Length: 233
Image (cartoon, rainbow, N blue to C red; front, side, top):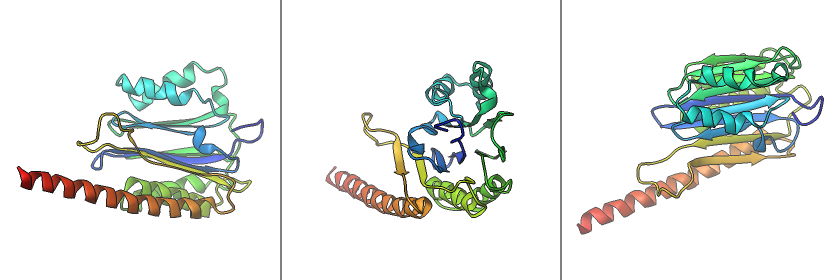
């Protein structure tokens, strides 16, 4: 990801149409994975760019998704224009929950991807070929918020070995908007990063739990305020 041999990463891109959320979760050995791999925009889609990552796949991918391109077309356009595409790995989910993936032939073993209904898991330089299938199964079985389901996918991948050099960083991004959100507010409902940590997924789980507690309190206050305004009317 950052140097010639430093590109072992496992990630998931997904959407939850009922909760109107899109997101990405990722873990790896090198730090600052959250600054490179995950990209998402509300009612647009999500992108994970990794292996020998092409950073521009993120903003360019979202630009194409905003134009209404399908996930498959986005992957095709991004990789076709990239002379080093065989070193890249990419996962995309679009606004309709359609997914597409790319794993270049020169990504380091084990490198593979698996897509399902509304999600795609991908990984390279993995400890085992079971990492990605385990992530997919965990996501499909998990319940709760999209953040919780993404986290469960990462945990399952880590249990199978994850990045074969070990994992020290993780990131989780979920985009969402309520109908009453101020137009000036960001769509980044959850944006969490852990770097240079001996147990990054444990810390990420702690942050997700704390973030969801804060979100529940915030939503409860907003609902109470809305009820008071209704009574005054």
